[in-house]
Image (cartoon, rainbow over all chains, first blue to last red; front, top):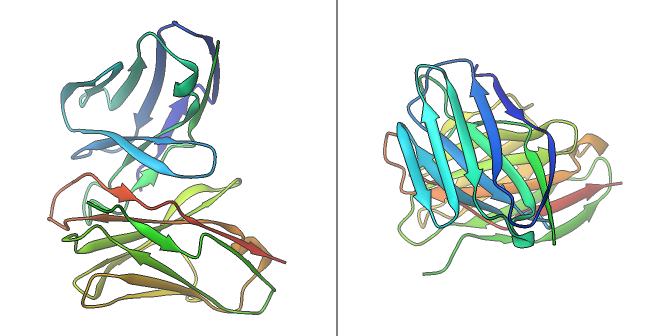
Length: 111
Length: 114
């Protein structure tokens, strides 16, 4: 089973700051997911990436397959970015939907 | 197009009872996965259904079961409820292709067992 470690667990930032959330996993994977969960529980898929870098607005996700590490960056953070960010990986074999999740990073952005 | 819907959104049950939760995927999606989220264990995979067949199951007791209908709608059932089953139950749908693909999550059903 893949072990997924996220850091930090909690992060408080001032509006406008650059944010980095890290995710490490133990077994080689085909892709990694970054998810966002707002209070109330709804989860939104932010990125799925298997190599390199992806960018969507102020969000950037990178992955280093050799290092088994991924980062999620938020540029010019805003209070509406306050949420829990979760990385998730599929198993090395079997269904890609059988995700293992990190414990999440609670991000609070203060105005 | 309409997103993933889950019903009911909130549910309170008593220990020993059983419960059925429903998930309607995005139109055209054939894979439905179920996840349990608790403060202690975080998010955990329950099972995945594709074309009315259970494709994978996570490490949960047999009290947790599910099924999928021909229109891809899925239900999960928990029998003989325990206090520890109190959780947010999320379903997610996707096309069901063999490899990794983006999943679309529903709003979840919050189950409280008293």
